[in-house]
Image: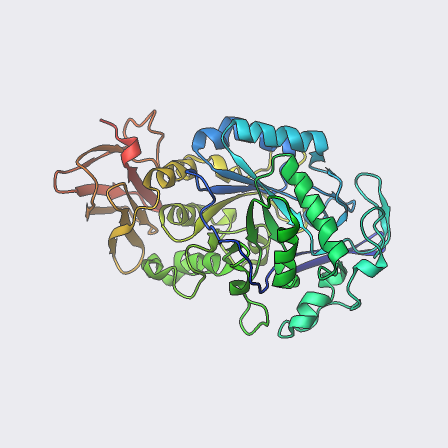
Length: 459
């Protein structure tokens, strides 16, 4: 679990990024979001106006299917990123933009062919007291127009024991007032908030801190909505803990935190050949949303981050090319202070979502669809390659020296653009020939990748 807390104005300010639960619900999990374009990008802490522009100029043209945006709620004041995760009301009145900006973003993204996933903070409300970013005065356990003291669990102490389900789901995460989601009135208020976002065109939700709500409660909230859309729960797996990710797969999809840790181990010395078994010990592919990192894991050191350079890029290539799970590309901002909030202008963002290697692999995934994994090859350590049926082929080289190899593929004969290096519209110097027998003789650069698919043939 990631728990962050600081004192702001003498009151406790904290954020979590956790989740989990149990349930018997009628919804099918759908790790590949509905539609032909299946890649999600998380635009962490991006102002809604900037996300609108990104959808039009970058995400739509690149073929992203979904964009996940940071919480649309009024929250506590402060510059730290985690203030967004301490709501004081369900008004859209935070630092990322107001209701009009949010609605305009949804419209712009839909016009660009990109659906919107809203990060929903429904387990808790803010700690302390003060005035929110939209002017709402609040005190702990009293959030006017939404919740009062009786709407919160009676355990008013911090969670201490993650092997105790009651402690995890009824007590307070880093001092945040814990909503009693077992109560009908609480469920109805939360469902009304989510329904309001749906009425603005939001296509689905990432449920923050699902682990801290009983799975039956999460299912009941979803059941109260008129049309809940696509759901994914944040459930961090912990060995020996009472609450596990598998409990949430009946509600929808679940973020697979073990995946990023496996990629880090492989790319930082364990050998990437081990990734042939990347699905072992994890959620089933149909339920798992995969990611190289997110805002918590990049700060706690459990995954690769943008600071890892080429290894980070290659890990994203593998995620996007592999058939396991549903990929979520993380695009955040540069930081040295782990608490630092987002940049105030155009500079300082990582723009991972817009890098050619990443956008080329988004197109790759759209082109190969559900094609099976074929033609696996590895050198036992720093290099691997595999095909996606007769639709695509990818090779990764995590070594310090270039790799020259003749690969076996199932691709039709022809000349292909290496979309990991260049756009199909401008591929001079980055083409590869596949022979009549499917063989490809290619040199993969040090810390580089080769990605070919039938939608990007050069001639």
